[in-house]
Length: 251
Length: 242
Image (cartoon, rainbow over all chains, first blue to last red; front, side, top):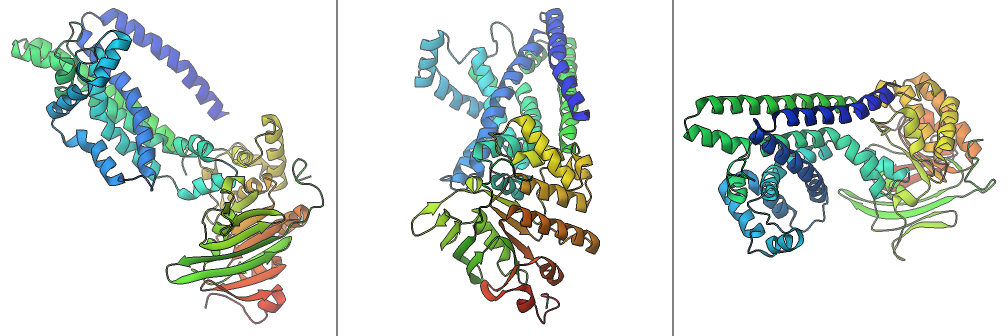
């Protein structure tokens, strides 16, 4: 029964918090535009990295993957590359002269680079190593006997994945989302390279702080810094609580 | 009553298996014929007992070998036949039981039931089984709150719920005290007699084998060194742990 109740609460919380977020956005979208921009970029990037990162983490667990260590190193590369170098590579791959960039433009009538899309991708690529690492830790913590047990109980690979592997790796996946979000929220260098310093006239929070600092508006720097800190810490606080709840399900 | 939906009543199938598998220090080379009833596989630690079960379950693939249950060929290396684990109708109770920690007892039991069954029907059957094994009151609780004996019973219920054609037990009672062991062995005996299927029970305990076994197979360093009735094979042995 307890489990049932918590599902109801969760189902109610999602639309409620969505509504609260919407109202907050309506009230503050002009004054806090850079923070909202960063928030939306980070949120969408997190969703993308979660899907891609979980997929990659699963792929890396596959023992027969050719050149596994190399693939692993490439996925981790954004951690060790200077953000500007990462941004440069993204420009090459996604820019208006690249096949990908041209295909996107002919389909949607706008470029990836110097747009919202570019900022999302820059943030996502920066966070993917963190997400992959965290999900892998989650996957590695699963007792392989449980997977074997599921197979002896008639579960094929897909069912094992969705009923055993992903639920048991959930703490790692949530932790990965949290780290990915934090990293995406703070991205500076890669975003500026790929999306420029303004997206539809608005800078991201981190770029705004730099701009205002250079313009000697110390009060604005202070306000945005505090707001970003509050947002980041609040998100991490709730993500931590959620991870702890998920850990309860484990032995 | 245990199996109203899948087994054809009265079918009695035997398991035959022969396998060869290089294992670090020695070659596991075993042949087994297990009629319906309980076969106890005994032997010192590291003699390859668990590997035999893994091969029967399809979790390990031997270099050579055949596994045949009744008229179903599960494995034949020469003919390149391999039925994957999840398509073999067997139940495997692991040494650590491997109950799913994120599911309640009843969901653990339902997990292996045929998905062609209605959800409500699965639920009902699972409850009946848990009640029968004396753990009906745990249905909605998660395994982490179970005592050793309770977890064993839930694991047994989950295994039987599949209406298996073959049951594999890998020392599931080794961590229990003597009384609980006796209770559960009696229960296992009853269930196997009812289902009329082969059960392979890996154990260290000579006492347990004497109580349970229709056939005892002793394995040492990957080879069968003795087989026969419990009375014959275990005549002068009090413990296998020399």
